[in-house]
Image 1: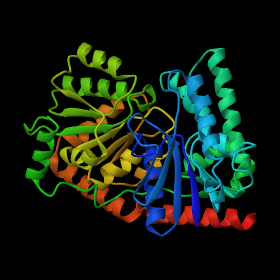
Image 2: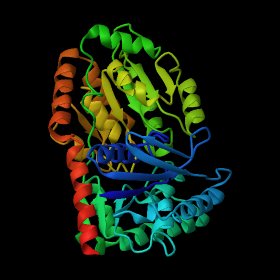
Image 3: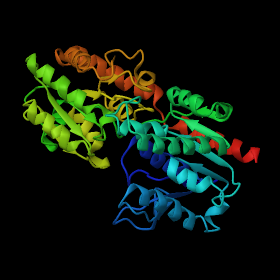
Length: 404
């Protein structure tokens, strides 16, 4: 089939769980012999067009000087590209994110080509959470409510317009039921996977030590807790730092490594200073994709302190494949990945004491931690293969085409 993949952001140009899914899917479809054109926004220094992993990547220019200009430039940039008859000759259009999806599917876009929409999150809810300290039901002003209402209309438009809808988790399917229940008969569950060859446990203590040294992390024998997150309030990193303070007060030996970047970096640095955790916490910043597997191999435990709206948890999947027990909040789809997994724990969101207690149980004794790590790796090998996701996309694409 000939796919036209439409995205606002895509891996590896942009970091994030949904972006990772888009990048992996495009490469895997191309590897199966399908023709794949990917439209995504352009970052400075990247070519306007290139072929990567068998995918024809087309990047449209965007204006990042303000949110309004960014929204408008996504719409106009995509519309200019969609005038190309070669792109409009696709068998199916697969949209991945709100802004670019609306630009493609609204009148004057791709016309009546068969369409699939991957629903990763209710963007109106993520917008509100970004303005209410990461809480799904937080209080925000009237102007933010108005923007959220507009985004909600966009979510609903894509759910109405798409011939087939894909979700990564049952949690996301339930969100569609609230947004636009009429889309449920056209919706299919398609959990993503993880590359278990790239993301694997350290072979021995020496490899783990070398990995820690390469990131400037201590190798004094204290367990390393890792979290890989965007630095925004919804990710709950302030709660994780408070849990680290509580563990320090108990006299527990550990080191916390936070990988990622974002607008909360300064406030997290201030929290670290106020809690006198500078010798316990390392902010690594954004870690290049090539080095991510090595970073996971440096760690002993993975923490995912999300406050709300966890649509799947790609970092959790990577941690499991890397043989790390996971302590995560019972938010969004986290329970779907971790339910029944021995050694890994689910805790209450926004409860640093509960988070500290669960982490402490893994820090205190190496033997149970190693058992939990082996169970994590087995879960990844059994349930986190990419092929079912690719198969679900192909099935949805064929159903959309047949329906037209």
